[in-house]
Amino acid sequence: MFDVFDIQVPALAASAPVEIRRTQTEFGPCDEGMAYVDGVAFGHVLRAEEAYSNLQSWMDSVDRGHWTVLAAAPAARAAAADDEFWSLFLAALVSLLQAHEFWIVRCESDCDQEPLDRLTISAGRLSELLDARRTEHNSVAIVATSP
Image 1 (cartoon, rainbow, N blue to C red):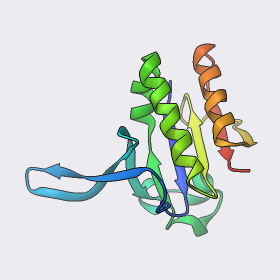
Image 2 (spheres, one colour; image 1 turned 60 degrees about the vertical axis):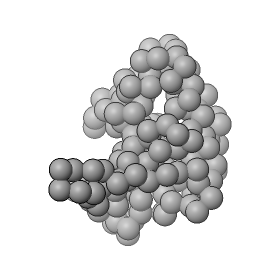
Image 3 (cartoon, rainbow, N blue to C red; image 1 turned 180 degrees about the vertical axis):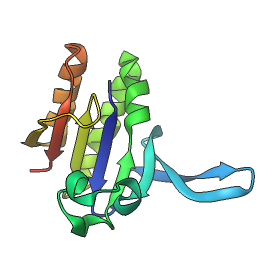
Image 4 (cartoon, rainbow, N blue to C red; image 1 turned 90 degrees about the vertical axis):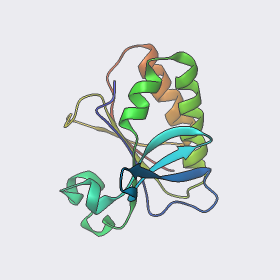
């Protein structure tokens, strides 16, 4: 259901319920981290300049390369397959977003969809919208920002 599910914030808020676990390799921990929100595996943590080759198209500004991106598409796809897991994922999303004054969430069922609906919306309302789209089996092509 999700080719893209990216949460973009200027920096992870200290009050955010996020635990970053460094990925372990056979050589030890690496710089890449996985974010867990309220115990739910949520997404890889990257700087925007690492996540995107074209900051202008993905971030609407070349000045946001230092922002933090949580690449949550794999977790969102897994969660969408199960009602209970989906509810936990949406609750974690709301919890994460409410800890930040400003955020951008980009969700696309298929990569590079156009046009994207651009919404200014609360975290709770975004959760409701995503839940409705999943229930109705409708595609998603949105860029949502905090009010």
